[in-house]
Image (cartoon, rainbow, N blue to C red; front, top):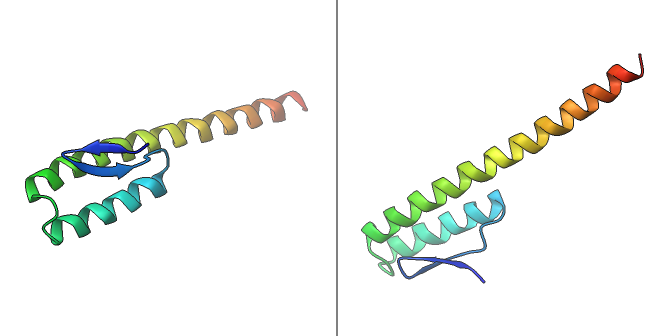
Length: 77
């Protein structure tokens, strides 16, 4: 099930690729007059929030992996 905002189906937003695809479809919908520019702007704000959250989650996961690897490396010395 996708995320809906202002009547526009943003689709699943669980990856950065999902967000990029939704942004592309949003731009096409706004350019084609399927949704108002105001609705597109609100949806774009939501997409930016989701993108930022996904990037933060990804960075945290990478940092945890690096820290875990470094801790393991310290124990082998």
